[in-house]
Length: 87
Image 1 (spheres, rainbow, N blue to C red):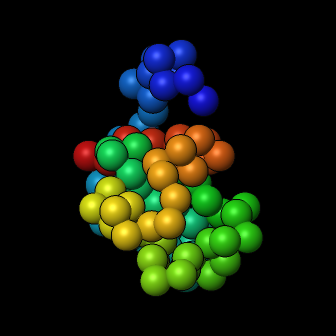
Image 2: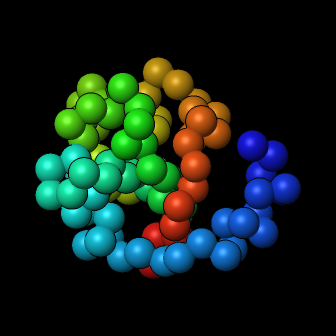
């Protein structure tokens, strides 16, 4: 996704709190969400996030600070649809 093209779409996304994000952890709701750099992504359909866990990372959290430990870059987020902004 070209961030310049997608920026207008991101600005119009609904805002969610950390508490609301935390509920989308694959346990409390069927939805599995993660946040990165203030944007919330729905990773429910990803086989890598089954049950809300991806290696040592848990869904329902802001993973911005954890990316440094990941074996991939932030380009991985281009695979997922942004669904909200973190308040």
